[in-house]
Image 1 (cartoon, rainbow, N blue to C red):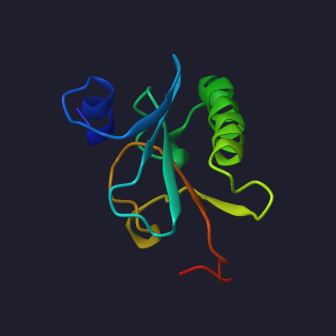
Image 2: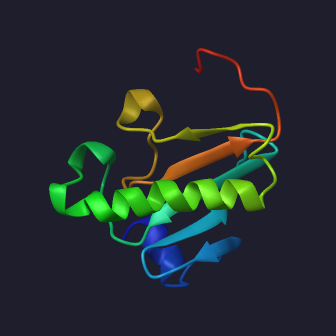
Length: 112
């Protein structure tokens, strides 16, 4: 089981701030911004590059919930960044697709 599957199964504690039948959202334990929330599908998709056409509904749900969670976190007006890492060069550290919501401070461009 991946780290996120263990969190969803309540085998590992986490600060879960949202959950439905498809996704959960939790605060990152090593935040890169004042607001750093992970939105994780409960289905274990190893990375976005390995998502399948049948995952389309889940992926759309993931993005829509990220926008709702960002609004509830208070960063919609000031702005926030959504990040999905894919592969080791991108910083992917958990082989389970997840989306980062980063906000609460100005973001530089390009990232990295």
